Structure formats: C-alpha cells, structure tokens
Image 1 (spheres, rainbow, N blue to C red):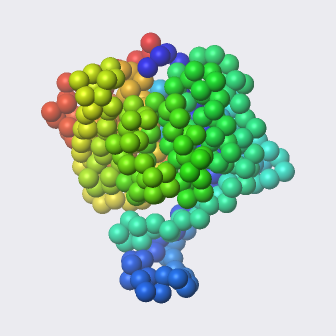
Image 2: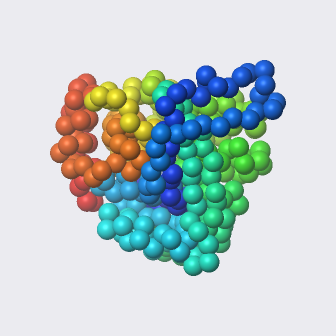
Length: 335
C-alpha cells in the first residue's frame, strides 16, 4: 500500500447498549412474523462513543496507523472530536453541525450475543457534502463504511475520480442501499468486506454470487463470527498470480467470556488494514484483524481500552504461534 493516511468515511454516533437477560429466539414466533410485535425489558443501558468511522479509526490508531475521519456529527460531538484527536485520529474532516444531533445507535444484545438494533441518522444525513479533496494529498487508502447512502456513493465516486484505492464496506447499510447503489460502491473497489449474513443480503439484492463478486473486486473478505473469516483473492493479481485463492483465518481465542459484540467487526477491519498498510501478507493481516477483534469482544462498547504494542504482540504470538515470526511489531514503526 502506498504511504499516507487511511481515511475512514462513515457514521459518527453515540451507542446506547442494552442487555436482554434472555434469548430473542424464545419470544419470536416464526408463523407470526408477518405481524411482529415484541418488546424486551432490558437489565441495563450504557451510552458510549461509537459510529463505524471512529471505531475503525480509533483501532487503527492503536495499531500505529495514521487514520483520518471524513464524517458529519452534531453539536453534541465536540467533546467526542477532541477525545479522538487526543487518541491520534486526524479529525480535520469531522464536520460539526450545530443545529442537529449526532447519529444514535440503539442496540439490545441477548445471552447468545444476538443483536437487535435501530439507528437514527442525525447529522450523518449531511455527509454527502463532504469531499475527500478537502483533505489534500497524502491519502493511501479510503474506507467507505456505513454512512448516508448518498454519501457512500459520492465517496466511492470521488475515489474513482482521484484514483484513490478504496475499501467498500456497506455492512449495516445494505438494508437501505439499492442494487444500483451497491454496484456503484463495488465499482473500482480494491476490497469488499462484510459478514456472511450481509453477504447473503448483498447477493440477494445484486444477483451476484461470491465468485461473481470476486470477478469485480480483487479481494473479498467475509467475517464469519466464531469461525473466523475468509479472504478471497482474485487470480491474476500480484497477491494471487496463479489463480484465485481463498484462505481461512481462524479467530483469536478469548480470555474468558465474550462481553459485547458491538464494534468487533470494525476492530477486525482496522487490524486487517493496518497490517496491509505495512505490506504484511494477507494471512498475517487477517490474524492481526482477529486479535484486534478479540480485544473489542472482551470490552464493553465498540472501542476497547488503549493497549500497549507489547500487549498486542504478546496476544498475537499466544494466539497464532505458527505466525510468531511475522513482523507484526512493524505496525508501530513510522516509515
């Protein structure tokens, strides 16, 4: 990957995290789904900093990368912006709108780590007006993550115009994106990423199979929960010159119980991209993503407590001894 910052576009939000002491599946009646009416009494609620763009950017900063955010937030996010700045995230492109609230994410998690969520857009609805050009030169990669649909299309389009490599990460917005918007986001992307359920939605909406998607995007990454992830590389590329390759990346082992799945996928993306920014092989980058993800899974909220590079390296070597010789320490070296 070329030198420069990783710019993350996407939502900036406050997350309202609630815990349901039972299982959602116990109160969902399959033959009554056409008239679904259900309420969950939760045990607790916490308000934490969230949003896909800060989640990814914060985890990138923990891993020694140079992240920047291009996003819109409300007047209630001024303190959030300053906190991100203090954590090493370039917030030049984080626009604060004084007349509207920051986006809000309301999610309930049950005993099986299943989640039901709703999202209020707030200031995020104005993100389409933001331009990558405003950040100047020195952009190595752009992450087009869940945002206002018009903004996602606009950012992907601008990446093509500026010849900037970009990751298309539609994930939670797939329910809102049309077939045409999804295809526009895929067009010219260097990496397409999502979880296996989201890929089911993507395939249903576009009519494209996983192999057909790989014919359009050089790298397709699918996260698969407890099964880890898969990274598919298109044949004829520098990474897979002799034909298409799909590698399975195992998850990093937990230390104790899972605490909260919110933001785990964002942490995985940060680990994967931080490692690729240092030209680490895909099989190593995927494992860096797995370790980054497990730090998030063991924390309440989408942004784990700051850890030292030494702690991350020890966890990586403990989790993947067969890759202990990889130059993961190079993540924190400035080029």
